[in-house]
Image 1 (cartoon, rainbow over the protein chains, first blue to last red):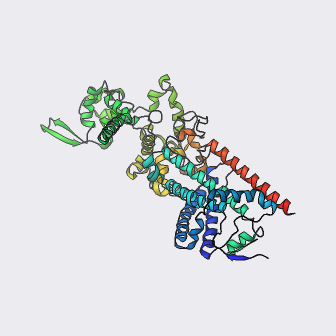
Image 2: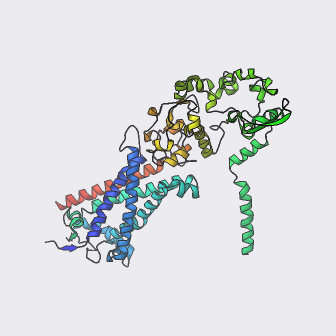
Length: 204
Length: 324
């Protein structure tokens, strides 16, 4: 019999799904622009540009909500590391690589105080506090290239900014795939997805 | 110690001002230093045609008279000596009889030269392929809609025109110069209506659909989208009707970008650079999304995607197998 813990308050669930839709839109339109080809058009280039720009601005606003939410609510504490970071990371990685197949119990069971395991915490911090801010910053620079990039750093800065933006976008895409896969590791393959809809996490 | 560092920095900054002068400043200095061998002869013409007002002694009324020069007959001497025709005498192209004042009424009938009168069939100008330019120009909407009224001089003022595509190393200047040629008429109703009774559309409004409009206007020339490219000439002259203008973004924003056959034709090299960028010729001046891709980054990202995907598939497979 599984136990249910209320882990995800409404604002986090709303922000999460909203953020997921925006990220998907940005990734699809981003790929469509970066690899545009008249012979194999994915999405019309001008539509991609418009959708990408609008979704990017909304993502930046949504990130401010996430940031403020984590400052103003106890949820921010979930992103603090416990002592022995490296040891904990290795222990969690070992579990995913071997322990899970041997039927071992997870080394860091999910509780109300610690809803992320060390690997989750590490990847979420990296994505939410390094990658997303960088992708937003470079995105704003690309949105106003004449004003923010060329005037201060010259023409060459534009492609360096864009490469950085594309690289960060790539990391977000990779994260998305890994994130979706690891969400299937729950009480049932769909229980974590349901949890992000109703707010309750089912323990093993 | 700190004072010494300031001194060193001061000296470095001072010399850097000379070291990092843009190329076009050097070019301007070169232009300013050249003196036409006909400067003295031409000065006679510029004394009237180089100014808004001219003066002459009217023997009938025995008085010095001030008259306004017809604006279409004013030639800016500074622009002239910076232009391609700088080392010509006015009388090379205009009748020597203009040396007399008042000019004879007969001189109004003087035929005007066209570009091909001097530039056709001359080996010195073979690389410009003026014959092909002329052929393309006659196919263009400018020539076909306006017939003989529209001549080369409409865009290329012989008294001020200077070639850009091969010589100007400052791409921003080169683009601005070329676009100003179009805007001379297309942004000025009085000039536009010299040839037509149509209303001149507002260029900013008609290009409203263009994302990042200001950036496009600064980074590409009007002719990039409004002409049919001809591989035999550097600058396309077959301006198409507005309905045929390129509106498909991927024509430029793709690996086989149209810009390589137009704006960057002179710089274009087909080889991938050492840094792995496709269409590197563009990178000096701009970054064109879709056209500039990095080969190595592409390979690494695709490789990583495949590795992660395979890793997850193996993990999922093992989970399913072991569960059963």
